[in-house]
Image 1 (cartoon, rainbow, N blue to C red):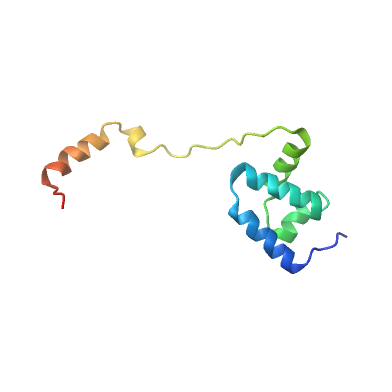
Image 2 (spheres, one colour; image 1 turned 90 degrees about the horizontal axis):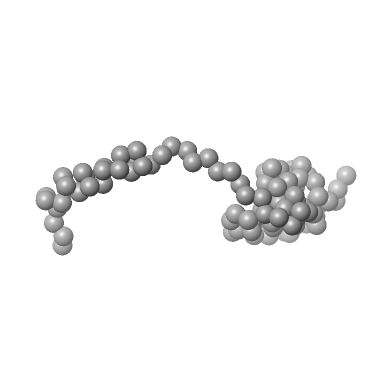
Length: 101
């Protein structure tokens, strides 16, 4: 069984991870997992509540030295993408009746 870091250190690590985004967060989680969780993404999930997939991605990046680009789903297209004339149509309706203070 792995030894647990002190509770105070866990709180500090979680706080630091919350403040990071994207590649920096992935790299940080991988480094913490390597240093304090013996490279085990499952133990890091149990200890810190992080997603194992993110940790594994960070560990793979660290090992290979290459950044793995995440595939992001685009989700639903914006209304302006679906209806390109929407903005001009709305402005045509609203501008004549609006006033600027």
